[in-house]
Length: 466
Image 1 (cartoon, rainbow, N blue to C red):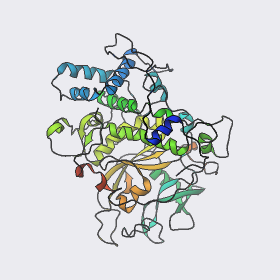
Image 2 (cartoon, rainbow, N blue to C red):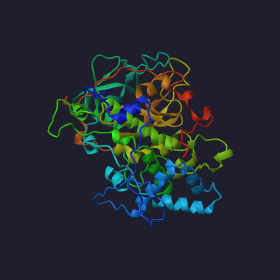
Image 3 (cartoon, rainbow, N blue to C red):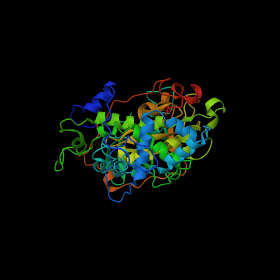
Image 4 (tube, rainbow, N blue to C red):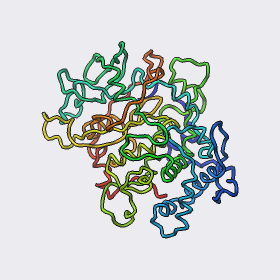
């Protein structure tokens, strides 16, 4: 759903990304300090930040990771670190490198990215972005409502039906509020329905994650773990030439309107439009998706003998096995440090599937079990689905949750709680608005599991060859 903004010419970097051209990375400006244990000569200039201890050895480790990544040597280090390479000296060297990297946890900041020399040109205006509302007129929602439940009528499926089956529908738009209720427009009904705000928050607010060891994703997350450090830094380095295109700075500190969202994108020469910003955000989350090297459960043969079946998210991200819930948990662990750097909310969803429904009168909302992530990008609050085992890092909510998308978002993953709602989260004044987009429906064989499921396509892991 686009913002109500004027069209703006893209920046040079954004235009190149959109055209498929290769963006030339900025030249490296400094060398790592000697005596740190790493022969890094390809680092970025760290920027001092209050309260951040960027030790020379930590900065040098980041520079070494960059050198290995650019030189195509990082895979060899991962293989050594997990014991797949008989070179014990290299194993010790790789292990020491990964331990020396900075820890970026679920509350990572732009100041850290600068201080450790990870990004020389980070996103701008992140503090302003994180103060924009999550609930404003026009945004798409997941909402409980009585709906058409016949999956064999896909264009009416999940639209409003008086006396219909109570279910969660994505075909909903926030239009107003009335005391402790939101007014929500559902496809198929002219007048909005009143829904308790608590119900809307439960389905749409980000889930509670914080600190070094977030809980509740089914896998052990420890951002101080050397493997987790390595994969997080790898992902950050892979997006360092992309993130500079993100600029959420208001065009004027004194400009109050007419639309708060328009202030972020309109009126400043050379600033990217909301669509281009969204494209860059999604490219960043795609990079995280592709940095993970996980395959769907299978036999241990060939190069897969070193794949882990364990519980540590970092080790699994380096080279692991996992079904949908496992891979969604690891993806969540990898994404959390970037949520307040790129601008998106994370929800871990457990839901059903529609493909096994055999009759028009059958209940389609209780079959199967599948896990994925729901990402909501700020400030336009566009909902996208990230489903690693189905090979879909960023599929539109409309398509993913329609019949041919084959997913029903039944609930949050077990044990996860909703983050607190802040006063800044809700602005129904009309000063902030999202323009409703055209409803889309999924396509069979394109938006369902058949298009890219790892078990159906030769263990398509989605991981990059590092």
